[in-house]
Amino acid sequence: MDVDTFLAWAEGQPGRFELVDGEVFAMAPERAGHALVKYATQTALKRAITTAGTGCRCHMMPDGMTVRIDATTTFEPDALVYCGPRMDVEAIEVPDPVIVVEVQSPGTRSVDAGFKLARYFSLASVAHYLMIDPVKRLVIHHRRGADGLIVTRISSEGTLDLTPPGLTLSVAELFADLPPPADPAA
Image 1 (tube, helix red, strand yellow):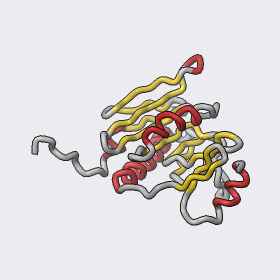
Image 2 (cartoon, one colour):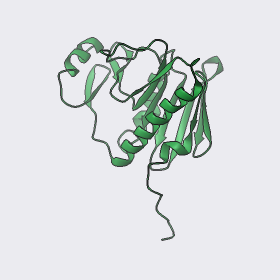
Image 3 (tube, helix red, strand yellow):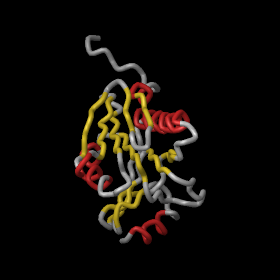
Image 4 (cartoon, helix red, strand yellow):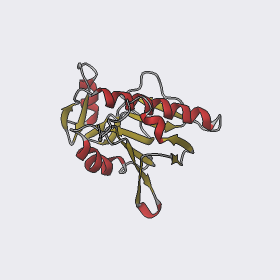
């Protein structure tokens, strides 16, 4: 199945799906921690865009938007940022994301870290890919570097520099809605 056929089909279906090499995959239900971190990330990205000021012509989109990887593959990241004019409100696809975010879950860790990493960076527009682990409370920040290299930084505190487009994100803010971690000594 190609992407255009998939998108026409998916609009009439209950649930959410991704297309991988022409094969349709249903997206699993989310755990509470996943949902909380996803929402906190969306909120933090929106706040970072607002803080960047009027010179930043970027926009955050929550989950549910489609990113076309190639003719037979689409993903629905948990959040993304694109820059330029606002999209048409009827759009279902974001053509040039600059930042893509996947909040990890037990069933997606290996796919997010391998297959999706390579595929997201096959898009020339993608400058940052954030993989957020709600259990370990860390962010794996993959950034497009010089000479086609992908630079990776793992953070459990501090801030993330998302340049381009010039956004700053607090790591703590992404996990602020989670209950405190269990005390291992208890």
